[in-house]
Image (cartoon, rainbow, N blue to C red; front, side):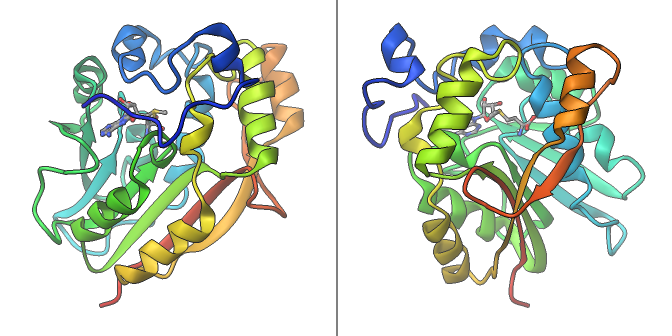
Length: 250
Ligand SMILES: C[S@@+](CC[C@H](N)C(=O)[O-])C[C@H]1O[C@@H](n2cnc3c(N)ncnc32)[C@H](O)[C@@H]1O
């Protein structure tokens, strides 16, 4: 499905000024060879996948299922090892799914706005760095909650719809090599935290938010090639990058 902006990129964003299509879905197929390079263009997604994996508890029952919405090439897979889930990944990008399969993900081609999986099939639904790419946030939330069994856990990380986030995650980050590619984010699609919490609540999930950021020390050492990865650390505000978690009412 072709991504559509909720509104055009405002003048002045890096993407708008360079004529790049913001949030181009073809980018993930084009750059699929980069997914598993820890120092490649998706490096930050490796750091985020580790932080996301830490939010997923061990499975509570044999045969537990985790659905990873917008799974990309399955960067979450190593962080689920030994936790006891069947890892199902849903994505639009065939090239990314092909790589996800190589890492043990049961890959399903589909749109997170109309997921081809049954109601209540998941013990855990993960939406990592995907909600800021969809043109219909309420619909994506409804789908995520629909997949959860009663008592199941929703795990999210995404970017907030604030001026600070637009400045840091788009204006600044898109100018730093290997941090964010130009046009990867459409400022119009950043996530309104109020809407996210309200929509989750409407579908029976009480979401709790926590701000995170990369450790600056780790990032400096990573840039100097003296660290393999960068840890995410808590931060007092959810106004930029945040994680969220909540259980569906039983
Ligand atoms: C920023 S990447 C995040 C990938 C993965 N969650 C991770 O953190 O490594 C966004 C992913 O969402 C996928 N995507 C974007 N819009 C989608 C949609 N409507 N339905 C399914 N996948 C989508 C892209 O193909 C891409 O793989």
